[in-house]
Image 1 (cartoon, rainbow, N blue to C red):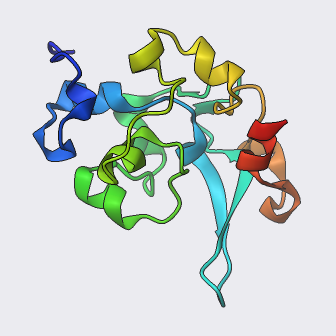
Image 2 (image 1 turned 60 degrees about the vertical axis):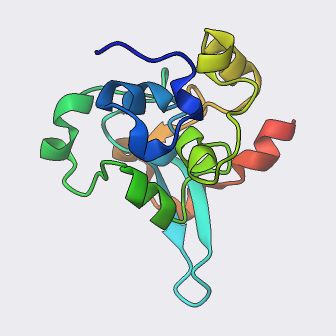
Length: 150
């Protein structure tokens, strides 16, 4: 990965290098979980069901570089797309920066470690199930924000 500029996360998303863009990801895993959309209201319900490539113990993609070959509908987030998709969590670093908001206090770029994210309950590692064994998504709806408060 290329060199990262000091406090690059405070820059406009369009100004980031590819390496900086990738480093901005908080690694929570929530974007890799299946969502349900209410056809009438458009409301998004999150589940604890992970893409088959997500390691449910670490919340990291098992084959990030080649993920689209195995999961064709996996989205590669871009500055434009981040502003358009309604399902990114409120704590997502991409979403926050697109809204010109600061990173959460637990973000690894501020703390130097992903431990604070786990302690804050913002990571799905160990709290999700693979789509290969989950069954119907309707049985796995969760409110991650309420879970974080506990």
